[in-house]
Image (cartoon, rainbow, N blue to C red):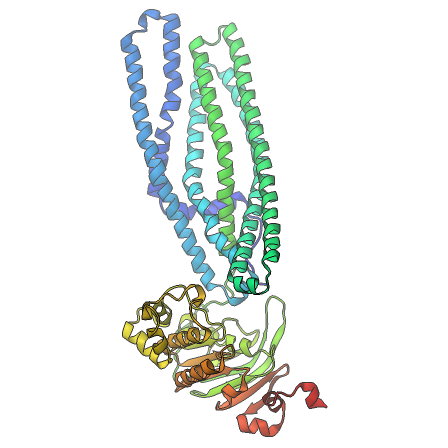
Length: 592
């Protein structure tokens, strides 16, 4: 089953795989970290300034002059200006670096999604996929910027504080720093629970998005069946699950913050008791005690900031994890290492003992199919639903790969040629027409990117679409709405045919192209398709047998493979399956 990979990644593995994206902007990163180091100067120097003032006032009052105070104040002002400039760069360029990385990751994710086969999209909800490449990657911007910064700043402040405090009193410093490992241990333990809760919330956001998308896209059906209350109940159920997941996540976060505050208090208590005793015994001066308290405050603020950042860290690491779950999903339809561009002369298609079963449920649809479609021939494929007609046509452009056997185009195995060249030579017109949100011109020109207006108009005329297009408010520049909602079924179908005319392929696949249309639209489309199929190898799948009676050859596909073969008159004379389908006779009636 081709679904998004869902496994447990370690944070170490995710960061290792994320590093190439980060190191692409190493110049920005290193200067950002340099600026981060500059922002620590005030926090590191201020305690020493206060210690100097306190010790001078207590032990050398005469030395405490306006000049000394002015120098110390000037030093601090300079440091504050440096801090402001460095912080500005961090907030602007640092975040922009995160945006660059997010953009690169989203581009890679989308490019990989474009390579995945139909079976992947049959087994994964679009809302979930969109959540992974939009919402999940938003947090990567903050993660990419803040993660290196926060840990770098913390490392500087903790190490420098340790060195400075050790000069004043190594025993007291060791006592205070002994609290940090316990604090970090509990933080890491709670982080694991927090990450699990964050991921579960992200999954549910995707489910909720998929549900909302499904309901809104099907809003006409909802209204037609007065199913608004049922849709509200479905939404309320999903929304309730989201509420419970967020409650759980915030409870874990509350425990997390509680433990942090308790350890903050513990460190202050240790400083007051141990520092007070050291002062009593004359092992530390009053000024050093003030500096100690300020450094401990800085230390606690640093550790607390790291702990608070853990929420952002987990959101970012979860976004990265869900990104790599997409990237690790294998593309089962790919070019072979030595694939070459296909060369299509006539367009002869050969099915050589083709067997196919769907990879997710192993449902065998086709078995040992042998069929030769001659170059320029219009071959029609008919049969009862579920017989594998659409599946057979989907194997030609490699939307799926054969389980056994092979498909040849002009003697070339489709698995040995590049996908781009293969699909460039195949035009497809389906029953369910998909138009992109944009103008009529945009949708027709999709068949040939960069096509001129003259080429688009010519294709539309060949498809019988020019007349109705010119009656639209803005002609070819008229907006068709999402999925072409502003156009009728026949109009959408003619635009899709114009798109294929513009593509000008050697091989044409028509899959139930007129089955959803009214009689008048069907006649117009049939004329367009007849024009389109001229000089092309054409495979037509149809339920309405009247639309294929003039086909060069008709193949009846059933559970046992190819049941019958011949033209319209020959098949009627056989009085077999085709005869029964043509005359609307049920199998039971035929057997009777």
